[in-house]
Length: 572
Image (cartoon, rainbow, N blue to C red; front, side):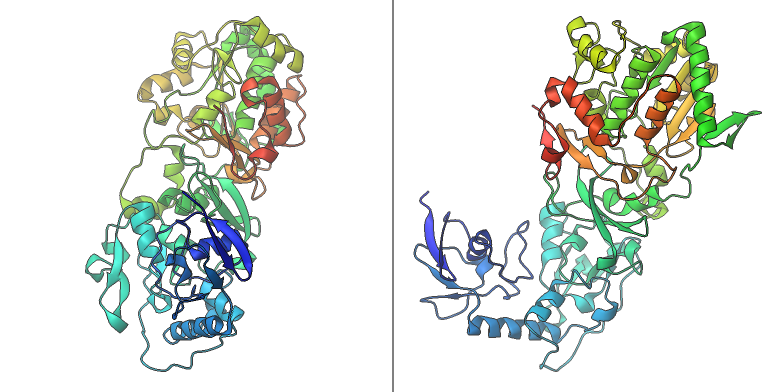
């Protein structure tokens, strides 16, 4: 299709025929104000703030719904355009509370921004005003319809992004309002509380309930990271203040999800990060009870017991069950610890991404989520792909390089300066078989809860009871941790840098937002334990861990943090 040439504010631009005037201006770096328009939604031309002047036309068309034409001449900031935009803003303010000093959205409210840009302080238009009650009877979203400008973005987000069509315009004329069917509150509708409507709202009409009163938008530091709840690999911004995650908001610059999030990612993240049930110190079993211990004491004890057991029974008396929730860097170090330090290929992870019952995060998400929705969700864990990629497999090193192939194994032996075993190790099922039969004496379980998630829970409990020594490294005192001789507290994804790999093989950055609640990150714990067992692991940052992995793995040879920083990278 032949491209179209037009002129905007005296500059010529060439675009495709399906481009709108607003989009063409954006390509030139010219910002046209808008309230109802969003690039992720269908365009309706409702707010009329994006009007422009086009030579040869009598009116001022909305640029978001006006297609370009060959030879079109557009002016975006003539006196007539500016005056018309000011009038639009004044009309919106005529029935909008000017309580910006206490509004939760100040700093991100587009109406306030444009009123500032155009010098609109108040409305000259007088008349009846709405006085709606604040709707806050659900656990997640606060609706203040007094601040709604009827742009329809929330309606389109619900229909086009979430696919639910829960809300629409109700009534007519001055009484028009956005509401579920029958004008009921959200709490009485079929709303799934994904919060995508909140993400697209340009004013303070919709707000995240959990962030109310915690600070103004400019008080929060934004840390873009990758969600930990499932294998989709959505990205979002953690909003941080005083070294605490205050909430989650959408970030439109995401390759996987744009601004779309589910209820767990948007409203469940903060509560599990800062759950009162989080472990903050190591626990050692004494006289049958798990009691708090210092890090050095716990690490010395673990190192001593593992050395004793492997010396007496051999390295294959130990097995490591890897997490599918931790970062790639942590999992890579865990399999390196198992192979280079202990000297066994007995490492694996649960191969099925949805192998069992509700995962541990669900149990520590907001109580309101579980009580209000009355749903038990089954989701694929977030880094199942990464666990395999990083070598948490009994037959393969990182990048699916076979342990029984000398030419592949020798690369790791040279880099790690150790001799590595060439025989395949135990799979998950074989680990618990051997534990029940007495052949396996010690296990290190990283971020997994097989007592809860494995369908044969009694068999797992029997196996764990039969071990001489069990280490569990997790965020919570899980059902599995209750059987441990030592429990090491884990840091969450918000407390470390690293990467996750989603179910489409996209490797994306995880960024540290707060200091580790247990005092150290998981990769630091694994490295410190390795050092205490006589094998030095020294890394200044997870980036160096990833670089080491990539240097040994053809699959990831061209991957690096810089290239992954914005959109991530996919392997073939």
